[in-house]
Length: 126
Image 1: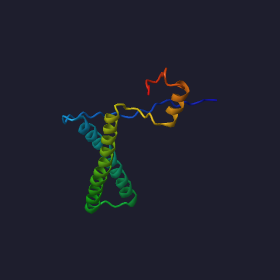
Image 2: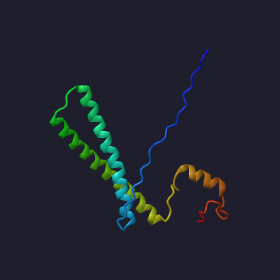
Image 3: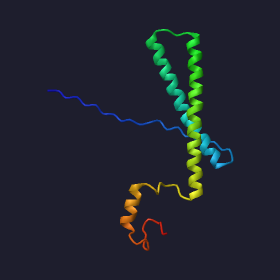
Image 4: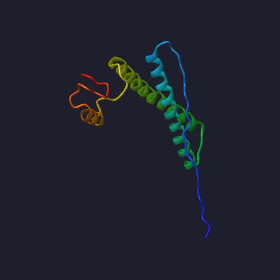
């Protein structure tokens, strides 16, 4: 009996944007704005295209509404992402570390490896 196989791999395209504003905080915030804003705009236009194809009608008004919605969604989600990335960068800069030390998994591991904290293997000597 013949058998069939399907081999394939999924990989996401990676787009790196380098923007130099002269300030690392603004660089990170602007990069987050552009990346997430473009994803939101693409999602919005795909959603409106699907509705137009299923509805069977495409008019100038429909295109204008889609463009307006695309810009609005991109600006909204881009702003949210820019604020989030900027805050994450700022907090990391203030703390001096970039990892999530406060996670319960880290605390459990840290307490198990460093019970007396005098011979700490994690680098957290307090």
